[in-house]
Image 1 (cartoon, rainbow, N blue to C red):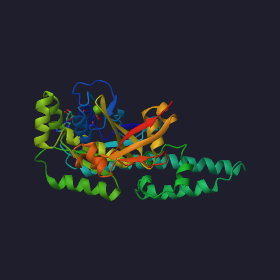
Image 2: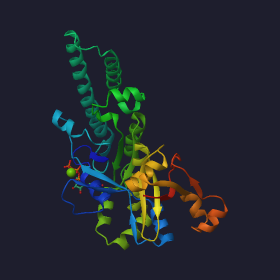
Image 3: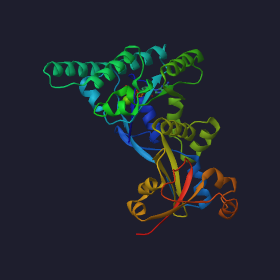
Image 4: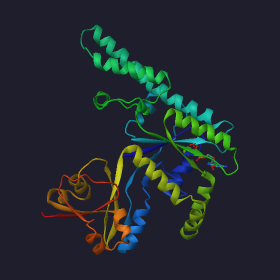
Amino acid sequence: MKIGIIGPAQSGKTTIFKVLLQSANITGDIGMLKFMDQRIEKLSDIFSSKKKVYPETAFLDIGLATGFTGKEYSKLHDIDLFICVANAFFNEDPKKDLESYITDLILSDLEAIQSRITRIEKERMKMKTDAEGETRLLKKCQDSLENSKLLRNIGLARDELKLFSGFSFITLRPIIVVINLEEGKPEDKVKSTEEYCSIIGMRHVRFFGKTELELLELNPEERDQFSKEMGSGYNFRENMSKLICRELNLITFFTAGDKDTTGWHLESGLSVIEAAGKIHSDIKRGFIRAEVVNYEDFVKFEGNMQKVREAGLLKIEGKEYIVKDGDMLNIRFNV
Ligand SMILES: Nc1nc2c(ncn2[C@@H]2O[C@H](COP(=O)(O)OP(=O)(O)OP(=O)(O)O)[C@@H](O)[C@H]2O)c(=O)[nH]1
Ligand SMILES: [Mg+2]
């Protein structure tokens, strides 16, 4: 999985990249994004784990600030989710700036669709192909893009999406907008940017770039304290983590013990045998059964497994069991 940051010039892309990677002096444009989760902190406390392991994913500061050329467009083909930064700390009209950037993305997709339609028509004339279904679908997408709709939000069916698997339309993928602002900036500007995001169907969060960057300069304890007081830092990273999971349909399950507490991502709707495979191929191969307790139930009893068991909240599940967000798994296996 890969996540990429895009957005207008000087909007704060590199700033948010640094903040999410918690490193003020990062030089490259690629890193590993850790998904913050309070539940991991809590579990590692309860289990006195020596190590905390967060789910992580490749993260790129793509830095594409203006309209895309074909080559740049194709560079984006393996990005699963975009974070698009909007400048509301300096810009007179952040909504207009963001809108024109998103319009550029829409136009890039439109161009790709149009050239595909043209190619199919040419081939049809040579009697080589009869891609009627695909043409109909492409035209539907063309219409939507011409009406400023993101392809992701036009309700394409699963089999329609399959037809598109060889393409890499940008607006078919989720875009989360980060509104980069400063304390004391006029609220109406931010509001209208947020309204635009809602109308077009993009999730959005507020971000105080400069403050967050300053927090990075502090030592970890001071940073923690400030973050708690201001609701920034960890909270921002955890909120982003949650938003990304929601957009990509991911849940988090946990394994916890004195060695480590680990959070794992899994596509929502998958069964425990797939979860086992995430942990180790041997565990999947030799799967016997899973002991499952959900985090919420576990902390209700303050991590007292005896009480959890007595309350009937520790379940023994077979390989068909569909894993839920927050499940803590202990998998019995034999290889
Ligand atoms: N005052 C203020 N300045 C900010 C904020 N966020 C970023 N900046 C400054 O704005 C400038 C641009 O920020 P970057 O994070 O480099 O923006 P970028 O989008 O990566 O820029 P390009 O890659 O050049 O397109 C830098 O000088 C930042 O320090 C903010 O919230 N407030
Ligand atoms: Mg930059």
